[in-house]
Image (cartoon, rainbow, N blue to C red; front, side, top):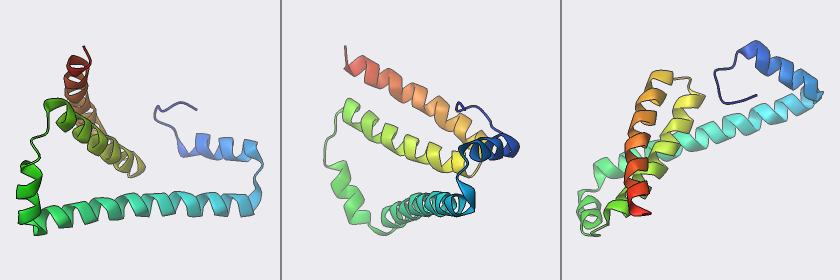
Amino acid sequence: MDNKRVTNKQILDKINDLKVGEEGLNLLAIKIVSRMVKLKSMEDWFDHVNKADIAGSIAYQDLDLTEEENALGEAAKLMTLMNIFQEDEEYEKCAIIKGRMAQVNKILKKGNK
């Protein structure tokens, strides 16, 4: 399967092809949910810290990051958000992230020349 939109039936067919059995499916489901919860809790923690710690925000601004360093940080954030939105099947948000990622990639390509 590629990263294009996949139906639930296609997913179930692939899982059945693997012949993992009920126990294997349960373990897989636990791992998937665990990853989703970790990503969501990381996002919630990040939002909380950003809203609560004004002093930290000021210190962050004093880092004097280069344009490329800022772009790398933005790319990491966008990739994390893309994973979260894909898991939540929020494809409109994925499209917005993809557009922003194209802008960030232009900055990174410019820095690598």
